[in-house]
Image 1 (cartoon, helix red, strand yellow):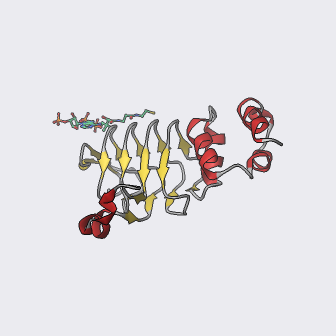
Image 2 (cartoon, protein in one colour):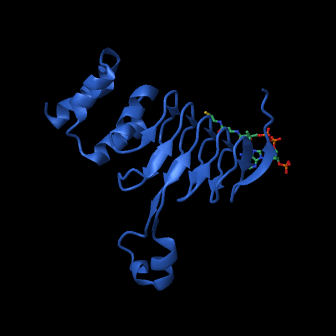
Length: 176
Ligand SMILES: CC(C)(COP(=O)(O)OP(=O)(O)OC[C@H]1O[C@@H](n2cnc3c(N)ncnc32)[C@H](O)[C@@H]1OP(=O)(O)O)[C@@H](O)C(=O)NCCC(=O)NCCS
């Protein structure tokens, strides 16, 4: 199938296709196109497939909303657990660099700011809309991240963290 035929099939016929068929149709697409589909495809379940095809580990029952952006160089740096809720416009940065900027030559930038580090989002986390998560962060099980937060440090399980930088404001009591 030509590239120009694949996109209409994926966009309009996905409801008649199972996971294996979707993967078979688009397995030769470049990673950057798969990620675009992951961010913009209208269907929740289908979006997940494109991220999984480009090395994002996503658990069962997790929902990835629109405009999910992952900076990881398509390397396996992001692990998302089960039943996680990712709201619209969330960005996860695992790899960070100023691209072609001459900042690359600065010692401080090279030694501290250009990084590639894993991000782990444990089971049952709820990430609000417009959240940014920085390299090296772990969101513990059942953490809630308030909309608009920038998460610079790991967040402990079953807590609510908000703001820039994100800080824990509340613990959630768990029954049982
Ligand atoms: C964080 C959140 C869950 C509320 O939790 P809560 O325990 O009810 O918190 P409260 O409303 O009692 O607010 C506690 C404090 O945090 C502040 N706060 C709440 N949400 C905040 C946010 N997203 N960013 C910054 N501060 C926030 C409040 O202003 C309040 O501050 P104050 O004590 O100085 O007045 C909610 O505000 C939120 O962001 N939900 C996510 C919404 C979303 O994106 N949904 C996804 C749609 S699919």
